Image (tube, rainbow, N blue to C red):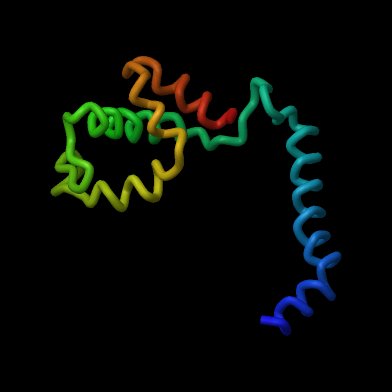
Length: 115
């Protein structure tokens, strides 16, 4: 443990630079393209809205007791909904979909990505 601490302490500046330089470059490029917090543009892929609106609709059904948290028959021969949820819907914000209606999922998606 002491050896790892020494390595981190000795190379701390390099580790900070290795994190901050790409972060600053990416932030500058996004800003030059008009992509920043609260702007009209987004870095989301074009199919993001169509995919996630379906995911949120399915998750809303689970939250309202209309679907199973562990297995779902709505895709092909069924799929493991729990693993699906951990990948696509993991986090604290997707649970807020409970308070939105189906026609508002695209707005919810924008709200989540602005947070």
